[in-house]
Image (cartoon, rainbow over all chains, first blue to last red; front, side, top):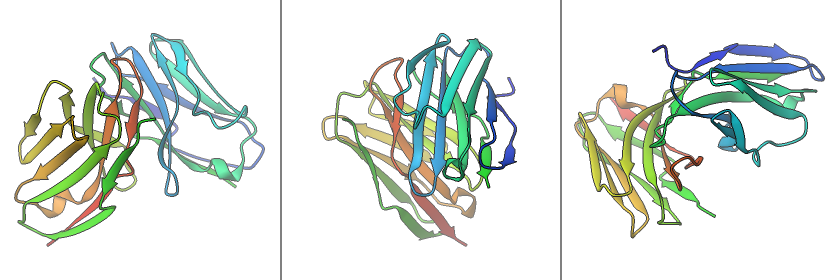
Length: 112
Length: 112
């Protein structure tokens, strides 16, 4: 298996633009997690899905953030409109029961 | 609310020494505990997963122990090498399908 796949790896955009981050979990994993990592706040869970259903979105900072999982092999995290304070590395992770999480390489987002 | 603490935040050790990284958590009713490694600019790599019923797990030069009652885990690295330099994160899960809560990590530097 190729592991968790994220795209793009790097994204530079201007304030106010829409940003869409993509994730393909490991085949067979039934849980998917979106995290944000910054120097100041460390690793924060934004939202997670179980069997494609959002379970806990309490970490989503604002209504500007939304996430979808239309099927077991794909998820998106969208920021609309983006702001400079959204600049961070966004990680996607997936797991199967027993909860060992496997992380993707991350998307480094820079909002100018 | 579960909180995970890792002390120290940073550690420098001469090559060849054995070392211990510490992790503590406030709620002992965990489902499992996971240790991750993160290299600069990279994603997280799972090192060891300890189920709540286990006391330790070993992989090569790494040994992780778990003392649920005292809310502690340690990661022991034997015969450290410069390639072990990275940030090590501890994370706990409270339920089988639940999110995991991360510590802020210990940044380890092995001096050649």
